[in-house]
Amino acid sequence: MPHWPAPLVGGARLSVWAPSSPAPRMFPDRFGRGVRALAADGFAVRALPSCAAADGVTTLAPRAIADELHGQLVDPECAGVVAAVGGWTMVTVLPHIDFGLVAEAAKPIIGYSDLSLLLTVVSARSDLVTFHGPMVVSEWGEAGGPWEYTRDQFRLVTGGVWSEHTVVPAPVWSDEMLWWDKEDTRRRTPNTGGERARTVSPGDTVEGTLWGGSLGALSLLAGTPFWEVPAAAIVFLETEAIAPDEFAARLQQLRLAGVFDHAAGVVLGKIGRPRACLSGFADYDEVVRDIVPPGLPVAAGYDIGHPEPMTTLPVGGLARLTCPTGRAPDLTLLGPH
Image (cartoon, rainbow, N blue to C red):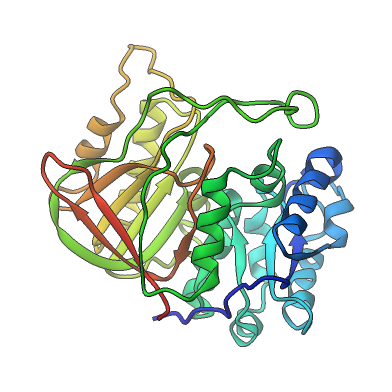
């Protein structure tokens, strides 16, 4: 089993790394607000040079991005690395990552979306738990600061002084889109209804290793040397602004790539800004039941990924999933102590 990195405590220095989108440079007000929010929450914050860069489709050359990460992991003043934002180009960085160095440093690496690729590969190749959690521009940069649920879940899960933690869905959530640095002068409006935590396919209580992340990004690893899905995985997936036909295609790709062959269960995040197919069909749960093999317990409606707020999940850590018939599911993280 992957081991846990050192816990993040008050006063620890977090290095902010921009390995994909140049959003920190393009949206400086939102980025600055996120850095200040991290500092206000008790962290010392250092923004790395990639946060001020924009080079072609990304921030720096892929090797330079990897070297920037390596430099922070060997820096004794750095307690962990948090991504500024996601994007699409993490897959170009992976060949340059020194996974032995990552394992030896054993420091928290935090992000989601495009960062899902790095998180899953580190958990496999470096034998280290990583954190699918809030990033600086997207969550910490929210107007008025991060949502309380987002901050509290992050501090608890990365704090490392717990043995079990049941993930209770947030009481309110939002998938409203506000253009960064232009419209995001207020906190996003909460939804009054929408998704709830629910059992999509019932099954026995299972335990397994958390593996997953962005439905759109993870498939970029299929067919590459970095495609490693642990046996008995609890697969967690998140996506947004997707119609059921594309959702079905992407789930089917994962099934054909063997993701569900030896899985223990599946957990799906809330789907922000959903839309119907051209035919009017809009039942995501039916898609899941058609594609995920029968017998696998499936829960949906958790606060994972792009909608606000979001929970923090330890990729490579253990979890227990219960999906009873006719009742809400239970997802419990099994921690380092």
